[in-house]
Amino acid sequence: MVPLVKPEDFVFAFGGHAARHRVKPGEVFDIFTEDCFSGKLDTTAGQPREIAPFPHVNPLTGPIAVEGLRAGGIVAVHILALDRARDWGVATISPDFGLLSGTRVTPNLQLPQAERVWIWHFDATGQSLTTETFGGRPIQALYRPFFGTIGVAPAHGEVRLSVVPGDFGGNLDMPELRVGTTLYLRANVDGGHLYFGDGHYAQGDGEIAGTAIEGAFNASIVADILPPQPAFDWPRFETDTHVGVIGCARPLEDAARIATAGMIRWVAQATELDIVDAHQLVSQVCRLRIGNLVNPAFSAACIVPKSALGSEVLLMEGMHRRMRPTRSPS
Figure 1 (cartoon, rainbow, N blue to C red):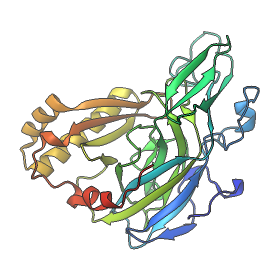
Figure 2 (cartoon, helix red, strand yellow; figure 1 turned 45 degrees about the horizontal axis):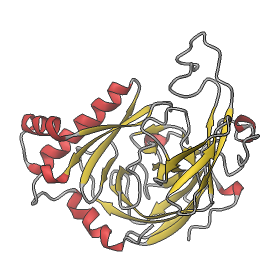
Figure 3 (cartoon, helix red, strand yellow; figure 1 turned 90 degrees about the vertical axis):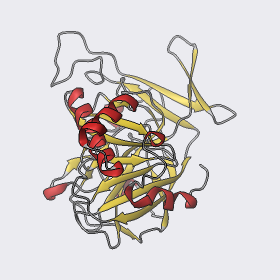
Figure 4 (cartoon, one colour; figure 1 turned 60 degrees about the vertical axis):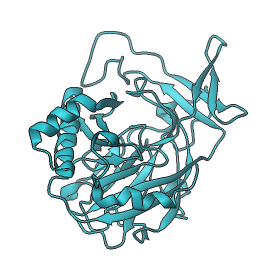
């Protein structure tokens, strides 16, 4: 296990760190990741911005170097297991934060929302979470665990805060990053320097209130290496049934353009279709999913079913298929 469990061991940025741990390609490793409030917000009376003042929010486990991975190569990160580390999660609404609030970059003259905290508890089955409204009524959400944040060190020596998504991955808030998914990222430094965090027990598309049901995980991961690909520039992911490309930008339509253009180019390369035919195919079979609408950049994914690409198509040199047999149930 990668032993990063002490508060002083977590970091709050991508890049700028020496590797704290090293793993071999194909080696399964276990990690602990904290929730976005560092596990400190455990009561409805808590004050999120006092407990986790910006930028000390969204703690990351890492960086973890993959031996033999060179800058320019691609790291494949496969999620084997996400086991909740607690029987509760936390969600908040904060002033001047979230899709429906004014912010520093989207100001308005409405009064800010009051800060609120909800503690969500697992039910007896472990398949859903419940909390009590401030009016005393119970509300429920299905347990749908995923990592809100997986990334590598950014390019050109940049250091990016842990709340930021980009071409290096980061705070993507994409529910597809769950057990059984392989995420592909381009390495910008030797070893790649993987970071993990921001566990989510549930989240709707857009993370519109500003947080998911945030939770800590004990996770099992395996990482492997692919050679450089000239057309690879934004995060890709693969499941048993679908492939996707994630784009990050503001406004949201630019994130969608990045994701869709990347998906079309990937389909054209994988299927040997002309780019205009790949454009037509993706246009008719894709889904566009919103990851978040609250981060410094928004995230969107263009997702295509593998069945639309043909049974003979080999994606990312068959890496997902090779990693899949090592998967264990969450």
